[in-house]
Image 1 (cartoon, rainbow, N blue to C red):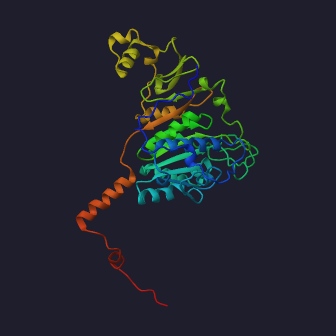
Image 2 (tube, helix red, strand yellow; image 1 turned 60 degrees about the vertical axis):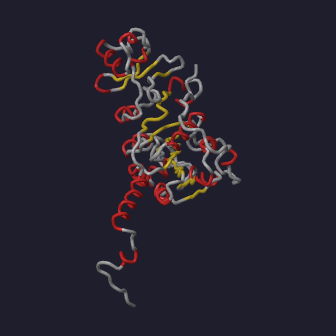
Length: 374
């Protein structure tokens, strides 16, 4: 029994406009290496765009520098290929000027987390209504294979022949700490799952951050096969589905639960997952199970049930990784807060009502002024 990809259906309304993936394909020659995971992300994005039923002229795709940042050329929408790391800043301006647009930021682990880390952090902190997709291949591919901010400690490559001594950035932890109101992860080879994550990011109002593991076949091939190979991925991945128990494995025979010291632990289903009587009672209360249901409930009710609005659990899950734990994919956090542009426009409207329209010339001519003479 396969558990991947297996995602809940979105509750989004039916699209008003019928479009296909071809409507979002451009006529530009794609210049990614054969086998690059970027192709998979492109296919998923154009499919998700079409499913939204939003006219193409409402889309703007903004990028920085890197392999992933060639993305705007390959989609038939408005686009902006910006400078290194500045895509979130450019996109913020676009979203602020026209909140009706669906603004996407396509960036890589080097572009987004190194030179662009500051811009990315503040776009998420402000909750700008941006859809940020971070392509993470854990390497600088465009510039021939230097280590990136997400490269593993000890990674040997062209810029670290004896192994990098830097600890990597965890993109999910960064997004959670920055306050992004939608934080999710997918993998380039999980096409159906990625389409759903892109759709949900698009439907979220506020800063939506999607982290995608993406293979670089030239400079960091097979970086993620220890949890994506078809034969093992059911045992090495766990899907985060709001309200559902955190169970995984080909036969749904493993689960996560909160152990002592507020640490998550893996337990086999049916042998100890139920815990003590006190723990079972707490679990029954937490999951709204009646006393009669408790007697016949499945062991899953004794394990963690995922709550995407709970940041504490999201932090704990973000730190899990193979081989001791399964790799979490899906939505880590989803909550609603006012978007940045909504607050800005509301403030402008309120001040205008109180003080009248602004006068830029009067502002420039007020206070201490002087003439610069030859």
